[in-house]
Length: 397
Image (cartoon, rainbow, N blue to C red):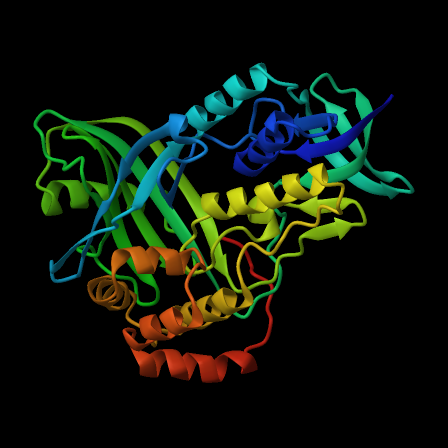
């Protein structure tokens, strides 16, 4: 059985849903048939996740935002507090079930994509585009034919890189019996936790009310920890640092995000493209992905509606990638004290400029000014030694 569409999108995560929503809800555009493929319920479907990003003013998905802040705090290993405002920028938190529900509501009133559940077993190029070879949830084999295919599935392995660290974390959604959180401020990085020999560790607090917050323990390091270590670190942070002992855990989340200077191919065939994290949307130095996905999918949708070849744009500029590669190498080599670096950066650079820098929206002059507020010598040494590092495959977490 062969089914023909204009566009097939593989994966219904942030990238797949964002692209489907943009293609199917644009007004004044020529209609196109869109098919959205996702795996059946089970281990291939990702668990609920939380995405954070920042933007100015009203956003496209504000109806799905759980909470938003324009005040951020960073605390050094010695407890020194950096308390800063982001002015017009708002730091926003979206949970994946809320994002999916918002997209579903929009698609319900428009020409929604046709949905197919199944496992993709292969993609083949054809003279008129590409074919997706699919095994359905019922065990049938189907072929989906399309002019364009956009694949957001996680890669089986990372491309070779000079440096790869992992951002690995576990978070608890906690509710306390007494008011202990400040719902007007996000604790972006609290370094009052033991630091690894290479990389860094911090706690991260996203309050949604005086009684509730997402509290995460995060490391940037070469490998993940035994499972019990994350729970131990979270208990220590809540009990000892925040002095919160009377609380309940309402939900949990965890994840591993590669932070790598590898080059991600955004095209795997004449009519087949990778999007989202698989297409390099994750910012190597921070792990943020959602905002880059929105830029990437907006550009793809605009190209398709205009009849142009929809090659996904590079999510991050060459200058941003070069600076990230130097920072990752400095952290991985142990030359740079990560906790001191980020504390110093947030204490010396206005928050709004720093967030624009992390989005790759600053000028060369602004980037140089930020660089001068960083530990110059360790970064220069890393810049000098980085080109001599060989490209190596990552062994995995």
